[in-house]
Length: 150
Image (cartoon, rainbow, N blue to C red; front, side, top):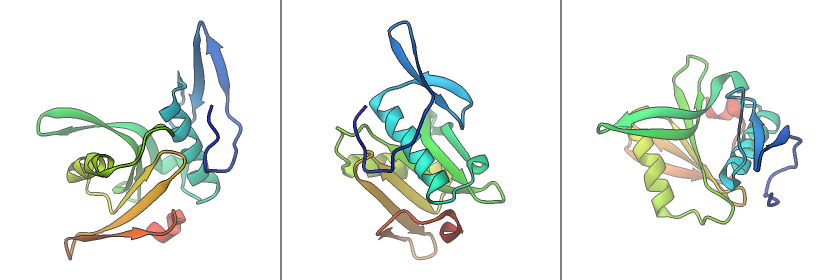
């Protein structure tokens, strides 16, 4: 898999027939190792290891319904009360992060109402804070520690 702009981590990877699988510790199951999944697994490790995000408050592939259409949020991070705190959207390293990517995560947030939106393709990472009182947002220079999000 491609080298990412993240620290290197060790993963449980196996081959089944002609498919590579990686163990997702949040979902507690083996999943197909795609380039986007590689970014997800590395970014989750980065958040839990480097940014002290509690794994118990994170979930991958969260289903939601928007305007009658089922969608899936890549990763949802909750605060200590269980309310949505951050939504994370991943793209493969070869996929450029564009306005379309931000439009996608904003659509998810119309349902979830998280305070932070994070987008990563493993090479570039973006984090923005939503200010619901002033109906505005601002980008944060780096991915903050979990305690800074609260």
